[in-house]
Structure formats: structure tokens, C-alpha cells
Length: 437
Image (cartoon, rainbow, N blue to C red; front, side, top):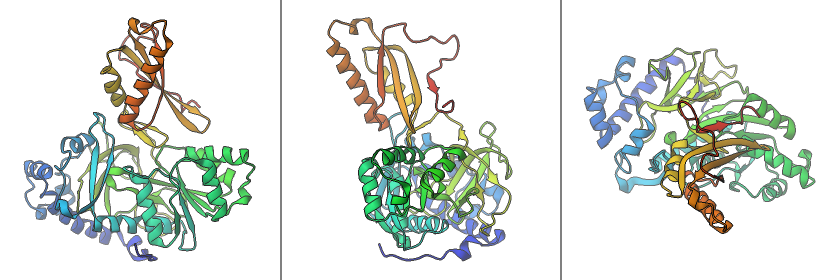
């Protein structure tokens, strides 16, 4: 991919009326593409929308029904594909609550636009082609690694695609190649600092200037701790696979909210109970429409993430509105070290195993800076024999079955029938102790 330094000042400071008009024009093209898909053709026709020109005003836009993760699973695998399959060059997927993944398709033009937007995101934090970018995010079906990788290259940075894990090697790469920018989860950076101390390194042994942190919820205190430990600036970012991953919203040098790039996305905040729109400044569920994807347009997608638009203008002069850091979810999804896990996924796996009884408990804790997921299950009496190898084998099978679905390997505890607490009302299946920590 050709290295180019993008200058987005004009689009980033576009007056609001012009930005709205740009969104309207792009939305019509997006709706036109969506009408080519089996899923949206029926969904939009049922809502009285048969032509992209039917969308002219904000009221027209709100006639478009919401899209949910369930819809994406129901349309699997190709029900939402708008481009010719021969033009698709990339597929990304994330796990679903029923084992059916949610899939997105991208053409080469889509990938180029995603790279451009991520280059803009890096540039708004002050990064330039003189920086060395070390990407510590997972590569593969997860969008978090590849998309920001492309953006960093597009901006002209030298990219070290180190991927996740192997912390000692990460540190050596940082030292040898004078890495100035890293991309990682907040919990991994805290873990890496502990390893750095164990290996006898000091922050001044490195050339690190900034970190891009995301993929898991974190507080302002965590950000400040990372900045204090490393002596760097840490920038919050937001993205999700359904919307091309990172680069959707990014902090600028002022670090006071993430600019949602509104020439690429339409953002709404709704009340998750009534589904009615909320005003800027009111906290609710974020709904997103992607305006720049030929392969698979998604309209009014309910992210389930809770946030608000910050109504005050940003000192940087950008007119694209800012999102406050996410404060939670309107569903039961857990984020474990950057991986999305639904309790219903775990339940489906374990309840298919005949050795397991009816009661189970999911426990999430902090183990140092990282998350630890433990699944406690009651097993049938016949499992408890004198041969401990039977229990060990069952434990390993449960772990393997869960890892195949949720992509991480949890700790598994086996308990005799009646050992786990029984709820006297709605069953409490998840205990998340991370906030207490």
C-alpha cells in the first residue's frame, strides 16, 4: 500500500450544515447499495422505503428500522452482501451468542477507505511518518489488529506487526527499533510494565511517546496510570467489527472525548428501553450507520454500548462530535481482555455436555492487570469417581469446547451437585468482580 500523508483539515473542520449535507448524500448511496441485499430489500420495503431518494430528511432517516446483532446472524452468511462476491477481498468475523458469527465483507475500495480513516485517527494524535508503530493487537478475524496497522502504514509510519503476547519479545522489539507508538489493550500495557520491571528495563530505556488503547472498557484512572508508568500520552479509541473496527472514533491531542468521524458514520444516541432519540449530552445507547462501505452496508446498528455526545466544541477546532468513553452495555456481553464473550455462549456449550448438571456460575476477576474468566459447573454424581483422571479429562474437554466458541480458554472448576448457590428468583449466573477491584 502506497505511503501517503493525508491532510484532512478541510473535512475535519467542515461547518455543521455542510457536514450534514455530505452525510445525506452518502446515506442515499448507502441505502441504494443496501437495497441490493436480500435482508435490507425486505426490511426497507416493509418500512415504505423502496428507493434511496425516499431518504431526504432526518424524519425519513428514522423510518429505517434498527439493525441488531441478531439480524446479522440471521443473514449469515451472505444475506447482507451488497457487492458482487468476486469483488470482495476481505472477510472479518466476530463470535455470536449462538455460535453463529457476525460477518462483514469488504471490497478493496472499502479497505482503502478504512486505511485512510485510521491514518486520520493516528494523525489527529500528532503521529507522523517519522514514528515507529508497534501493533500489539491480535491479528486475524478480529479487526483490531489489521485496520489500525493499515492506517499507520498509510500515514507513513514504520509498522512492527508484533501481534499479541510474547511480552519479553515485545520489549526487545521496542528497544531495538526505538518504537514511538504502540497499540494495545490497557490491561496488556499494565501487564507489560510488570514484565518490563522484572527484566530490568526502565521506561527511559525506550523511545516510546504514545499508546493507542482500546478494545476493552477502562477508566480514566487506568489511562492516567499507564501515562504515569511509562511517561507517555495514552489515547482512547473506539471501534467494533461491524463498523470496520478501530478508527471509528478517536481522541485528538486534547484527550477529552473521541471524535466520531461523521463523514464516514452517522451516530445517534437512543434510550435503550424506549428506542427514542436522545439529545446531545444525554447518555444512552450508541446507534451507528456506516456511510463508506460498498461490500456490506449496515444501517442504524444498535451497538449496545452506552455513552453520550459531548455537546461542547473541542479546542482542536474539529467539528465532528465527540463521544464520551463507553460506560457500559445495554446487554449482558462481557469483554475479557479485549474479547467479546456472551454468558449465553458459555451456557450453550456446557449444557450440551451430559456430564454437567443444571447449575453453573461465571466469575470474572482481575489477576494483576489482566482479566481472569472462571466457569464453575456442577457435574453429575457419577463423574466423581476414584480416578481423578476422569475429572481432569472432563475439565480439559470443557475448556476446549468453550475456547472453540468464545476464543479464550477459561479456568474451569468442577463441583458436586448442590455445591453452587441456588438463586431464589432470577438466577445470578455472572459475578463480575473487576469493578470492585
